[in-house]
Amino acid sequence: MAWTREPTSVPKPRVGIYGFTGCAGDQLLIIHTEDEILNLFGSVNMQSFVMASSNPTEGPLDVAFVEGSISTEKEKEHLLDIRKRAKVLVAIGNCAVSGGPQAMYTGDDGYTKRLQKVYGDVKFITEPVEARPLDAYVTVDYYLPGCPIDAKQTFALISRLIHQAIPEPYPHPVCHECKLNENHCLLLDKKFCLGPITAGGCNSVCPNHGLPCVGCWGPNDDGNFSQHLKLLESFGMTKKDIIRRVKNYGGHKILKYIENL
Ligand code: SF4
Ligand code: SF4
Image (cartoon, rainbow, N blue to C red):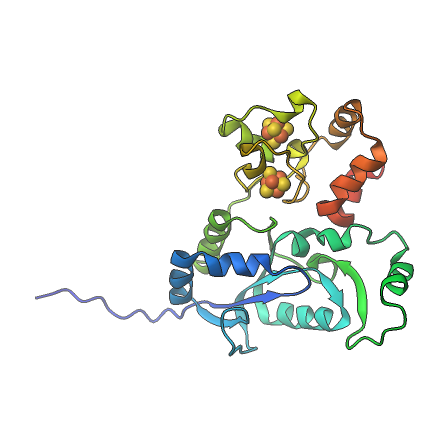
């Protein structure tokens, strides 16, 4: 007699995938992983994923994945609502984690002037606010950086979360992966590589192709920022230009590492 498995009574986790201000590249990456996306939709009860389905529901969630920075009052309200409904909230992509390039100058007191210069007296449908990462407004349980996020790292985290396991921390800088990939170090050629101060997870994709890391995974908490700044200055760049470059993806969050250097 054939053995038949008892139907499980464990409900599938309720998941929502949301996007705020950004290029939507992280949601696109999830959709483009054609093998995993079918497994994902089969393993969870997808409540909301507007880019993939036009029928969202706004009930309780086990896990919410949120892309993009917060740039309007309406987005702020929606984020607060998602946070209230979700047991676990994950920031996905550089804009959600660090604010993205649009948060490069956040906190410098020039926002109102810039807004006026670009938009003049336009009447907005929803009131704009200075771009900030998600954790400026809500508690974020886990961070998945990247621009865009990496498929392998993303589905490893999703898989652990939907099985109620804690995601593994990823403390290594890009240089760690770069060494494992046996690349020639671009710093030896005096190229402006941010690998030592950037969070890993991309498998050092840029140095693998001879291109310096520009820091799109955001700052690595253990990076020796002062030493790296000194090294890059010795290559001929000014401190101001270096700081501008690292703020491009580090947003205003990078300031806590570099403002006193
Ligand atoms: S090339 Fe860049 S990422 Fe690779 S080891 Fe050198 S500094 Fe690190
Ligand atoms: S090497 Fe640096 S710039 Fe390139 S994808 Fe990785 S973190 Fe981003």
